Length: 438
Image (cartoon, rainbow, N blue to C red; front, side, top):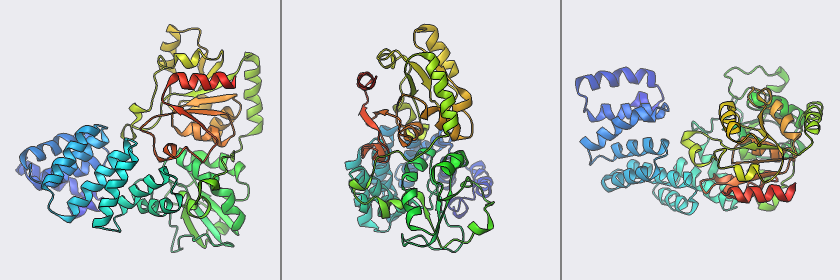
């Protein structure tokens, strides 16, 4: 168990297999096997093992916790809540109760039910005030409700987790916001989150001696142009940093979203103004192409996210988007970050009147600067909650977002980082907004 909890799954797995070979129903081996597989992102394989654990040892809370986590990861939320409820009925340890409260709260967060999620986070924090996962859950709920000051403090409870890696570069302290220092800012989570947090970089530069931005390599060129007062490196996922020696002498470091505790403590602190700059020459090239079309050029993104973040509940099919396509006679530009050509080809075979085109060299590469130039040249963008709508808003392009009821805290809070227009999860609402613009 110690090896598994320490993340040494390669060392733990042979031991688990050996024990399962002796007794396929051994409770400790089943627990560890389902735990390791779930933590390695293989919940579909972990699920039958966890289910067997609950069938064989139904009065053991740990089995229900593992089973619930697998169901949660597979977005079977109703079943996950039932599993956690069964676990709660037999939970008799402090640790099991904390895990169940935190996991139930996390399910409600995924479902966009922030009031319920907050209740479970607060119950967990009564049991253990320093429980980091519950602090994080509470922080998300608070920020969704515009309680920014408290929200940023609690949100930092997730630092050091698999979702928000520890940003320390040495023995330096976390930046406390004091001026005149050399500060390293580490990006975090996905590209969309990095883009949102980047809305605070200029303010950090204004009060610091020097700012070093450590971002996803896909954002490096775009960030270098946009934040000329900072040194930018695309090294966030690298173990070895190839920074200039002068930039290795830092006074403090901070995770990018934690800048909010200094610069975004009230809703009025969010300027909701553009802050990214695309390559002007490439923008002009795209605009020359659009001019030849003789009609508006509108970017569209109809899906985003991963299975574990509810991708299937925040996507439209192209058929469902027909009211949007028919709202404006436009050249529709695909902004999907995965190859959508088979889907587009099938759709256009049925609806040849819809001028929808994918430009893969701008959207499927490893440099988001290519995507930024394309997006910055468009007349407007329409999409679901995904990274490219954050990019579009940050570039100052008119952007309408169809907000699912399962949206994360940023959209529940109105996505104040960029000047986006949010509409309900309804194709007619999107169509009406585009008609108003065009």
